[in-house]
Image (cartoon, rainbow, N blue to C red):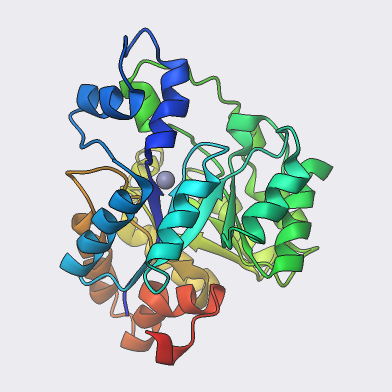
Length: 304
Ligand SMILES: [Zn+2]
């Protein structure tokens, strides 16, 4: 079983929402075609077409399951369609702005009717503290619906916004793993995922996960944040996290997002090689690369 907890679903609606911000960059035409073309990416087409594209890609790389994230607020329906189309392969997640209008009803719809499994908070982007009551309401809803919460902490850089020259006025002070721990501790049944080992706030992410046993750290992306720490390697990061938290608390991800690049096999290969090099037991590796995903999303062994 190989499961990837961190992939992005760049739907047509995603590009159209972004296109509203990028009109100078993409004069005329449908942003769902024009923006990918500018970037040298494939246009996503319909939600079903993009879902099939991912499914084919997962089959090609023998990825059994993946969590796909609708990556602008308001795009819940796209990834819900993908998860409905390939329910044994795709788990749906959605970026959520807790300060948005009608946040409570949107959240109920996403977790309820649309069946999405994870709400993704980006506090540095939406400038809502994790322990603000509007964010806490997301944990509360997740608890009622048996869903998960993902909270981006630390460094935040959105590649596509950079490439399109869109302003990204993020306030990284909001992405605090210790604030995540304070709220996660109040909702112990909710799995809480902090991506990229805390994206620079590694020590704080370890502290947070120590304080709240329902916190998992995702291993996704190139983890380029390690450049801030002289001499630190990704191997060291895995060694420290495994030693301090154990294999039940690390959940594999790649941060794959667009086509034709597709699923980032290289990220997986590097992480596998590190765990082999650290002589991590096969049973522990199986947790990181799939077992923890199954536990978080309630997938039975027979369903693999
Ligand atoms: Zn990501």
